[in-house]
Length: 287
Image 1 (cartoon, helix red, strand yellow):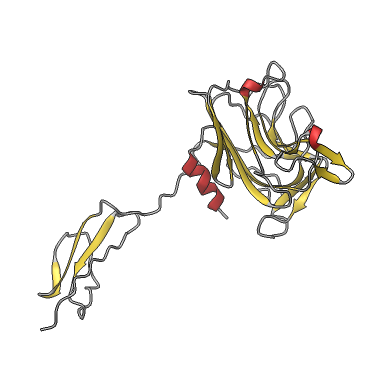
Image 2: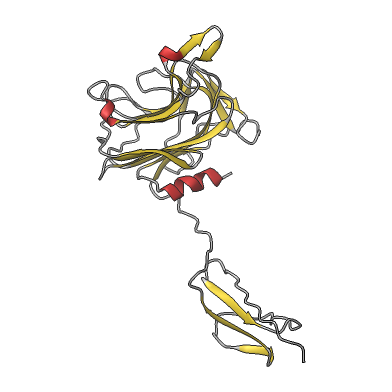
């Protein structure tokens, strides 16, 4: 009789959390009708048995529920329609036009050249999260507002490719290569209160490339977090919650009309809760 080989087969079953454990001879097939319903043991021969048991180490992929707390979602595919079901459809104002998205699909995103999309008043003053795909065209002085209702008070999520002091117009360049950064203001009142600002920098955003950017804020601890391409790049606690600014939120421009975005924006999401790091990372994987 040939020497038996013991084979341990673990098959993760999504949603069931079970594992098939098999101990078989090398020349014996596994029974095709194995199942966890009855918990019965069975065999095709004395040397081949299959049994089912609860799987303590099953690693089925957990898909987060990214609709919970979602109060506005703009896929920006030809229109500024809100796909969250909350009816917050945007209004395109100024130099904004359909553009290719990060996959090269025509009309899959919007190019901004000084214009913006008005998405109304979102009505939150506690936890929040913002996320978007962005592609910045070129270095410019000041910031590129991704999402903002800043007008003395309010919030602003922006990308900065060059501080004013590091910018040269001829040739168009930033004299300090690592001056690009991502920033979130939760409240700048009184102007310009940097204690409620979080900034992450050093070559985070490369012009002409797509980046996924996200910011979250948990009011209980005043903790704000910044993410680039699904990775946490900065976190800060003790930041004050946002306050009503009296103006609508804009995609691509500050609430007061400054910091226009020059480049392409896609897949803008607004949540009335602080997303976890795992949820932000999952957003990057959604096509």
